[in-house]
Image (cartoon, rainbow, N blue to C red; front, side, top):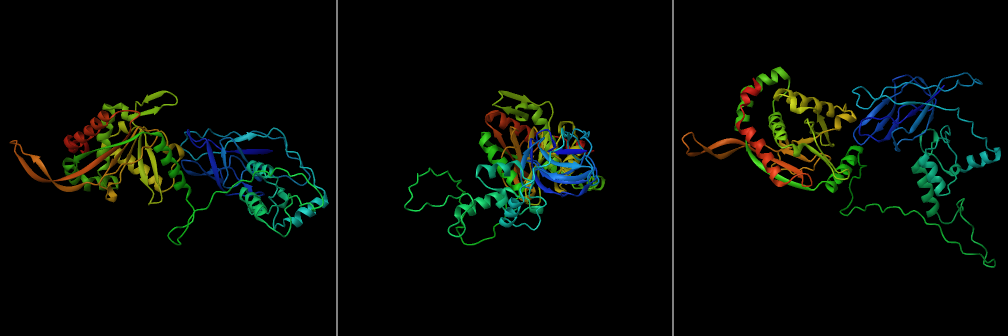
Length: 464
């Protein structure tokens, strides 16, 4: 029996994945639900379990390669004695992983026919290939990904001449590119296998048009002396691509308001000890802001909408699925989704925010945990920010920034109508919004609704 393992659907919005590493190697026994491969998507990195037990007989996609959902990754076969022929392939049922909250399972597909044995090479050719490219272990040289095969064919590369640096002598894309580069740059010594010897002067020869040679991108040169050069992490690479795409897509505008947090600060002071004893974590300003924001989103639904100009649609969400930006110890930032935030109390919002932040920092987020938000909030205030203009989490139409709350002298109106100077807790809220979706009047009214809620609501009742 043979089972083809394919790239799983690791979330509703995921269309492709990159192989990070194979936990199991060719020839190793794999048990059902045992981790077999690590895959990176544009959302998260995920360990993928095997859908069945068997022996890993083929790896079809090497580490570092990106393929679409449904692409064949590897083949499992049952162990059988020498000379025996495996049974006809059968299908293995696997659960639909899109939207599932359990560990993603790898889809298994039916192998329609047994793979024919490749034709045996002539002994003389085999000896020539071995002499040309000696390998300490050639057990995986014949395992070539589609990208490697195409790159070799397009550049007239004989893979028998290429030294594989992957596991078991596997030839990777980098090996082919290095071979092409060395062949192009070589001068003197042995003639590359595909080069045409220069004819003797007495022999006329037609001048053939040279084939175009791929031009490598120039490597960056340090300007201010030497430094430590590090490879860009997968997370940072994804953040870079998403931020550039967001700036190129949304028409960014920024608006801010000053908020007097004195009522919120008073409620926190009264309830913070009891809250921490009951919940196990501190009561911050963020849940108060979330509660006030959810109310404002209901009053101004355009801010909680999704705008698709290519499809010609403008979707006004009936619920608030709140994206919460979570800092991963300065190694990156992810936006985890708190679903149905509009149905939560202040305490419920505090618990939900705490839960997604803990899940993100322990690397336990699933792809769907990072998808589906309708509005986002980022909270640089604890780090000491004054005012921030964040990039919109496209396809959201806006993102709210909550900056540091500090004590400042402010003018307050006394009960008799006179003015006085008081020391209050004050901070700023900044809104980056997409001018394609709504206009400045909506942005200002939305922010003022949040400001009014924070300054006037009875927060004691919310916490009682």
